[in-house]
Length: 189
Image: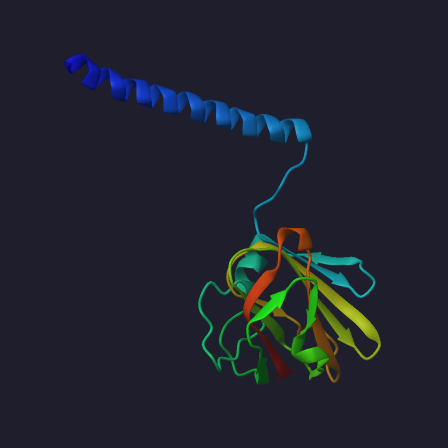
């Protein structure tokens, strides 16, 4: 009787450790045999209107644009994510679902934009923010593998012009992207 009390827990622990070890090996083996490396780190890349890579954000730059805090209604956020009055006007959307792509405020133009803030519900595998002026697409920002609010700066766009923004699902096979809201700060000083 005493032997059963000691042997059963030992056998259970041994069995769990054997199954865990084989599962780990199988996962490692698959990644080595496929040769595909999947990154789970957030990444941000900025492209010009022609699709040429302008900039890959460093980890330090990524940490500056990820807010990691709730944004209160009426808060104006500066281009690096802090609350600010530099953008004298803001537009804030209702909750939005992106299956393919969505125009912010139905394609309305925003004069002198300072930032586009997106507040997703859950993890976002890949979202693309496209900026257009009256001549066409001028910028495309790809954000991958992130949770929480992100304030993407647009202070580098030419001043004295108006821009519209389009949000696209960069990984439609991963399902829809759900956003609590999108906020655009414009009339940026």
